[in-house]
Image (cartoon, rainbow, N blue to C red; front, side):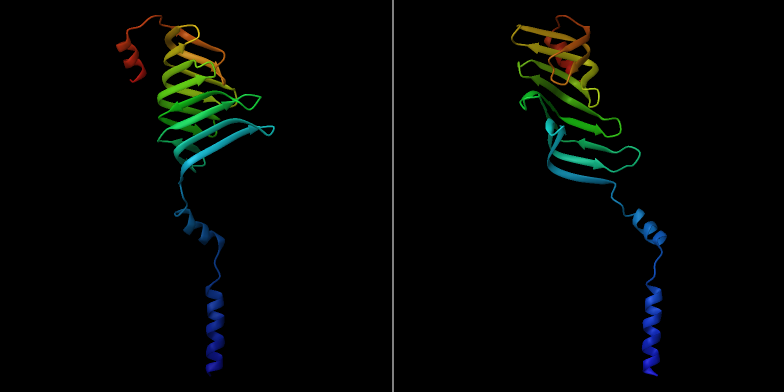
Length: 187
C-alpha cells in the first residue's frame, strides 16, 4: 500500500510541476525591470575600429521602454569627440543629458559648455547632438568666446560640426549687457 501511495505522490508531483510558457510570461511581465541604473559610466562609440566619441557621467539611468528607450545622465555628462588621429578635438560638459536611442541624438541641458582644441567655448542652456548627421545645434541663446580672435559672439540658434571647427549663429545679437547674458544662459 505504501508503495502505491509513493507512486501516486510522485506522479501527482510530476504533473503539478508542468507549467505553460504563457503562465510564466504573465508572472514575469509584472516583474520586468523598466530601468537600469549604472554609476561611473563610460561609453565609447567607434567607427571602423576607431574611437569617435567617449561619454562619461557619474550616473546613468537606462529606460528599457520598447517605444522610447533612452539613457539619462541626471547628474551631468562629459563628452569627448575624437579626430582621425585619435586626439580629442572637442569636448562638452552639461549638468543633464538624455540619449534618445531611436532618434540617435543626445540632448544636453543646464550649463552646457562646448570647447574645441583652439579653446573656443560655446555656452548655452540646451544643445542637441545629432549622432547620424554629425552636427550639434540649438535654437536657444548661445555665447561663443574665441580667445585667439579676442571676440565674443551672442545670438539665438546655432549649428556646428562635431569638432566645433565650423559653426554658424542663426540670429546674431551683437554686444550685450552681462546681466542679460546671464539671464539668457540660465532661464
